[in-house]
Amino acid sequence: MCVLCGELITSIHWSEGVREEDKEIVVGEKQRERVRQRLQKVKIANFILSFYGLQLKDWNASKFVLSDKKGRSEIVHHLGELWEKASMLTSKEINVLDSNLLGFLQKHYG
Image 1 (cartoon, rainbow, N blue to C red):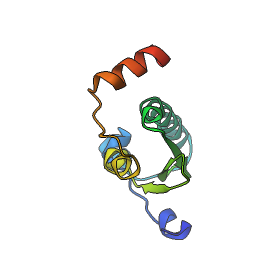
Image 2 (image 1 turned 30 degrees about the horizontal axis):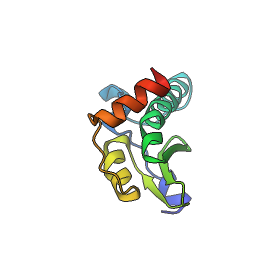
Image 3 (image 1 turned 135 degrees about the horizontal axis):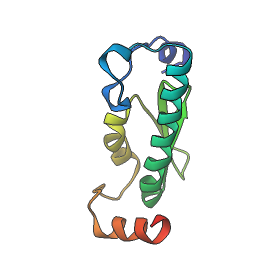
Image 4 (image 1 turned 90 degrees about the vertical axis):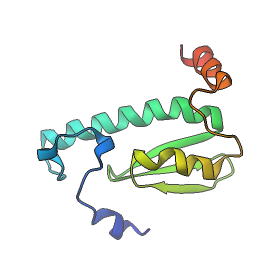
């Protein structure tokens, strides 16, 4: 998707955790708080994704870019599709209850 098309999207996905009346992207304090929360979610997702050799980056507070160590990447429109896109980039089965993953998280971030 080109940058222009990505910027034309004005609604916020439910995974952003916003109230119904705040579904439209606005400027000001509400936007700053939404971006802060979004970046915090990226940080948390990256703890898990690092186990699979993946990294998530915010793209202009409207999309995400998920990439692997080989340079491949996928556009993630919202966090609701993150694990589907992650499955496309890794050979490992993604299971957030995998004991190896939980051990990795405990060792590195616990």
